[in-house]
Amino acid sequence: MSHIKLSFVFYITSCCLCLSLVIANTLASSKNNYAEQLSEENWDRMLIGEWMVEFYAPWCPACKALEPVWEHLALQKKSLNINVGKVDVTDSPGLSGRFMVTALPTIYHVKNGIFRQYKSPRDKDSLVEFVSEKTWEKIEPIPGWRSPTSIIMSVISQFYKMSQVLRGVHNKLMEDFGVPAWGSYLIFAVTTIVLGAILGLFIVCLIDFIYPPKPVMLQGKKKQKDGSGGFMQEKSIQDEEIVENVMDDLVDEESEGETSDVEEKEKDLDKDTKTEPSSPNVRKRKPRKAD
Image (cartoon, rainbow, N blue to C red; front, side):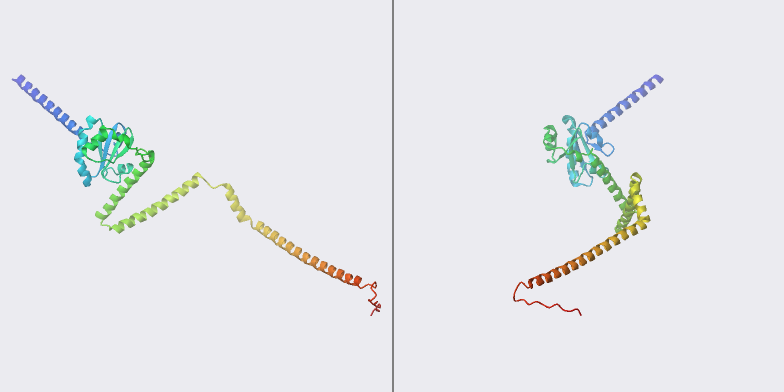
């Protein structure tokens, strides 16, 4: 009797194990038939192999309309030999900045780390044909500086994350603390000014530490402080030059006066020689006695 009970328990246990394996395989197969959810933690998976990735938001009507089409593409991923993924931009704002998502939904084709944006019609046949016929080869890939793997886009993704954090703080101030919108903006403005001043002071101190002032500049400052005597000497030299220039002008005027007197005397002599007695009509003058 005990032997029968043990065999019955073993049979029940084996049936439960088989049933659990079937359920697990069913769930795994059903999961593989859906698009893979990507986030900021695992987005680098799309750098290996061929992917079709959709960026969406739960509140977007166009994204909701595309959802059955995208799930149909996910069902065809084994036959197309691709991976199908999707990114919720509300949960991963950094990825929306990294991929420069400006409209929803946005679709990207990725082949071994080379990104191309899909801009064709969004129906089932067009999406399947885009992959099966390799229509993506006709589209120019995104340039290197705009690639999601570049340093520039990594920095932009951090700004997008920061903006999301600031938006959350703004909403919390308004909803939890009852701060009006203008009060929240004022808090952000004052905080920005204070942080900017602190950051500027830190940068100035860092520059002075890395590139200290040269000693030549300090010597020039000492000369300016202790150079009062030198300044007086320069001033006296300038005064002497002015006096010499004035003396030169006076000497020039005196020499000009002397030359003018000499010229007048020469003119008088010329008149006297003209009135010599060689001419008969000219009378001789008697010498006058001295007074």
